[in-house]
Length: 61
Image 1 (cartoon, rainbow, N blue to C red):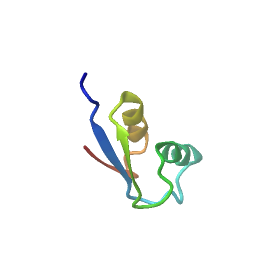
Image 2 (cartoon, rainbow, N blue to C red):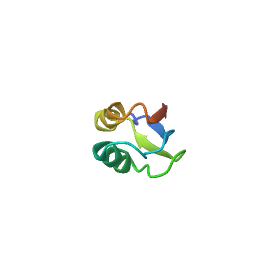
Image 3 (cartoon, rainbow, N blue to C red):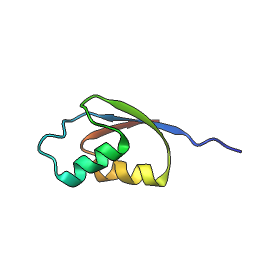
C-alpha cells in the first residue's frame, strides 16, 4: 500500500483584511497565526482549500 505524500502549508500573510470565508478556510487547515506551518496529507480536499487562498499560503511537498 502506497503512502500519501505530505505537504507543508505555511501561512505567509496575515488574515487581517481577508474575508470571513478565507479566514474559515485557513482555520480549517489549522492555520491561525502568520508564519505558522502545518502538515497534511496530499488530498484533493486539502489542495482545493489551498487553491481557494493561494495568495496567503506557501506550499512545499
